[in-house]
Length: 275
Image 1 (cartoon, rainbow, N blue to C red):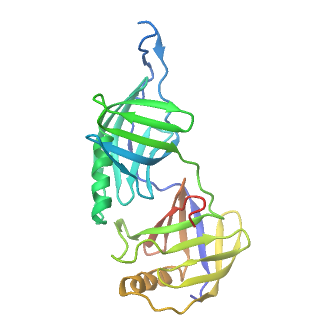
Image 2: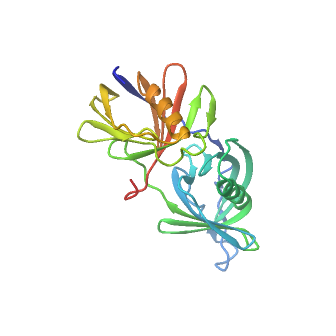
Image 3: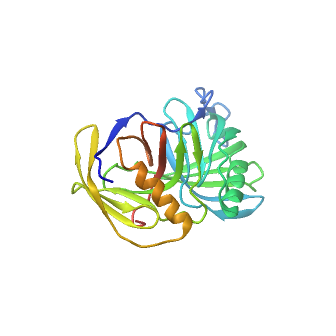
């Protein structure tokens, strides 16, 4: 890891889907008179962490990385902790109507795949939204499907622990090698250092930054542990990726790093206190 690496700021990357007809007329308020107009749920430009999903009366806690984002221009994108899913949504008053669209097809653990299916099912059809302070609850008409969310604050590039959760090759996204999940992390410190873990060994290096670029100066110092095959495979991939100029795209709590050939990684901000 001897060559300087440059990380160049670009616009946010997240894929998204169209949020159509965002309820400009509002809806009818219940119990307050037939002519009372209920304001639309103020969802544009908001990001939410998924806390819990209930489908058919059965509740499941969300894994790390599960979230839903409503873009300023009316687009929406969600993640179930592994894959990204799309939907078309309309909002009128406190009623949100969601039609699921395509989602990515990375293979994940069985429990995450089950959760993602439940999340998409809960985020479907007509849902009544209840917004209280920093919590949002979306409930199906029969009350058996419920999506519980908490407002999610953006993560700064520096001082955040970025957990590596996927690999990129051109336009293709893939999961980490089975058995290597959960350990690789990158931290861009306020003190001019870059530290973290490559899947097996810890690493550290110094860095210079200006308004748009970050240059990591090698060689990086690493520990010398031997780990499982999948962990060493991930470490080799990340070590090679970090040895060269990288482009980064930061979108709320998602970081994407790619090199000139299109090889790269995706990472999600760790919650405070989880580093």
